[in-house]
Length: 204
Image 1 (tube, rainbow, N blue to C red):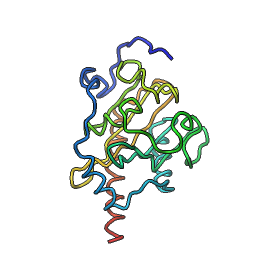
Image 2 (image 1 turned 90 degrees about the horizontal axis):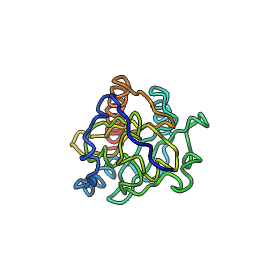
Image 3 (image 1 turned 90 degrees about the vertical axis):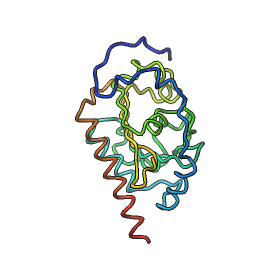
């Protein structure tokens, strides 16, 4: 699918300079993150509670897909929580449109296989109300495969300063996420980190 020429957008934080998005998202925290995820008991397995969290994220923001995405190592991102509005239930094994070319819940961490690596690099929420406004993402392999046109994501930053991954929501149409969407996803990211750390404390 050919990229549509950019057109103006005025959504919050969507005006980030394109030159920054063209930079490859290096990940100096990869090893520290892997150790921290293990300490929190987070593994590469589906989590029904995180599926429910993704469902609530989609409900609050109005996106058609939502996910809780952990960066397990320097090469993989794993959606421990997934939701597809098409089924209106938490997803087990990934939304149908993710089965090909990305089987299940695992995706490469490659910058051409998603937008979340850039959120981890930035350590800040990212709002793309219309992905066609951003040449870096307009031709992204997963964007074409799923047919999405908008993205809203926030980093999961724990109390030690490590970015564990992201929560994100996408839609197949351009979405005016607005300030409300940005505030919602940032608040839910903080809420989820608190829950993960509290669960780890209870286990210890």
